[in-house]
Image (spheres, rainbow, N blue to C red):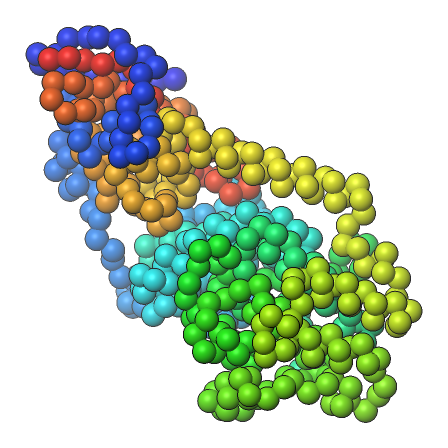
Length: 489
């Protein structure tokens, strides 16, 4: 590991403090906040670095010199420093969806670019980062995996998902009409299990609809339904709002301003079941009329909307899930699944086959979830500042000690190191990040941090490259800050 020796500032003597803990703003960390630090005396001037690394965002210019608006990605463009655009997949309410390929992994993904008008809203940006982190932590067969997210200076906010080969339920219904009752129950069972799973993680979806349910074929050629687009997902605990959602699936209480809840997700599931069974939505038309009907008119029984017999239990499930009073709906997704299982039995379906995973596979998934949670908890609890960022200093993940160290409030989502005080005490930071990312060789620097008064802490900053096979952080650089000794003037 390369090491750069730097003399302490004049007038300071050595006094070992290995292992001492310094408390900073209520968070225990082993080094003081960089916002109260002094510059290393053998580093290049910060002004020279600023001249070499301009921070303003430039307009995108095509090869022919034609200016392009922010977010206008084309085939061959590179987003986030690692995703090469291969084509368009579609367009949604939040932005465009592109087919991309990871430069290092060679694997194809779906990448959603958030529309500029939306992404520039500070509230939307905060929600995007919060919810992308939530979605990326979910592992379930019936949930579309979020593998990456961030912000590109040229193209804006983006979210990277597994690339699915199939079609949305919305498209299938519009092109082929309603689903047979058995198929509808099969799809509904899988989506209910996905919702049960996210609710057990205290996460709400907030925008369940047929456009956000994707149908694919599993390796065993079994129909597999995937819940996707957590663009409006949010923590269930402590959230207040009421914004967002699609009118045709919106519960009465949300229309009146109440926040998303388990009950509002259940309501949307009821609308989806109605849609699967009938091929149409219960309420359509102008926005104002749809909202009025959602608030004042009961969802009609699905059996009255089709010309074939349908078990009355299907009508009962939809009526309960879509009750105007949230307290009279199914208490949770498991309760809805219990009633759905009865209907499936009456239709001659093997409920055992509906279990999304065999016991052994379910145990493996739980163990995987526990490992992921354990890693996250350990990372968050470590008192040494730790973070992962790209070669330009855009942070993907950081533990509380790192955020405290650089004096950042909130979380790491969208954080740029150039906007922190760290470059002031580590002027060669961006050069070193680029070097480690390019050469994949670790690097150590020594910096000096003032605790106030005559006390200064000497600390090592260690930069290492992420593993090439890393699923999310490939191409990024890991940062660890470790105190070495105290110097007293």
